[in-house]
Length: 141
Image 1 (cartoon, one colour):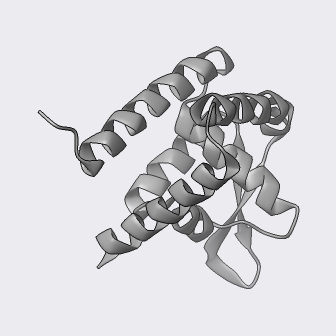
Image 2 (cartoon, one colour; image 1 turned 180 degrees about the vertical axis):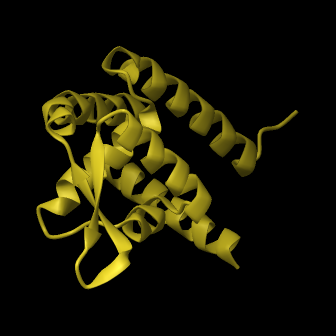
């Protein structure tokens, strides 16, 4: 059976999740939590980060984002603080544990990206990113 684009994307996604989960296991978090936590830490330097920001950045449904963030809160990675201007909004605040783990997470994300793109030129990577973004837009239609 010939592998089509969808099957290749599934294979890559599975391998990437498996690698990230294995790499983060010693830190007591999942691969998805590591990416979300890194995103929150980077973005909070520019101002408050909210659940809707995470939903948008990772293209997650509200319920999926809620589950991830609740587990991160339970595991002591983030705090949710009410916003004075709107009690329904909760700002996502990284904890000291998250700050402590971020260097290791950042290094692992970088190593994984290098492994993933090993042997590819900058032009090939740019083309892949362009094609992946286009495919994502196609699926949004």
